[in-house]
Length: 179
Image 1 (cartoon, rainbow, N blue to C red):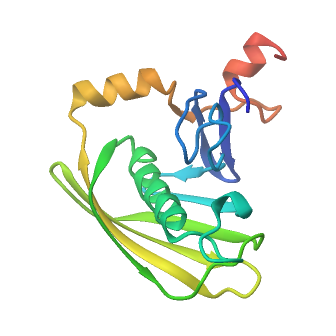
Image 2: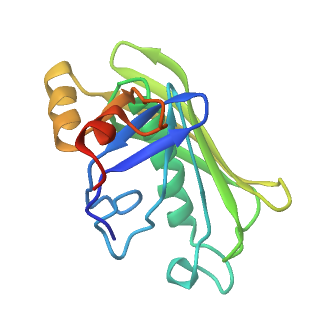
């Protein structure tokens, strides 16, 4: 657990920064959570992770509800990457194969269509070792209005994209010096 802001860095893509929070999926302050490190791009998000026995369903397999949580998380953050924020209105998941515990997995989510305040997304979980697709999802999110978006940006300290300096550090870090 950490109370430090998390800077999300993807080579060639602007940086995003998120303040510490208690989200079960991505929060750094939730000792019982997944602690996912999300990589956020405009209209895309992804994470690489392994699930341990705390998240077991049937013996040796990840619980399907945990995979749903991860799929929801990458779809939701794909909205935030485009400075859009929303809540899940609908989600459907298809499980293709069981996800074994302690297996390197990758989840990716992306925006498929945006119309007024409804945003459609898709996601998948892939076994990084075999490349097999284990689960897919489609979701619809209700986008927040401008007032709520501003409140969410403040609450989560969301800054994106963050300009970097020659050192490769966010401009705010270089000005403030090391933590």
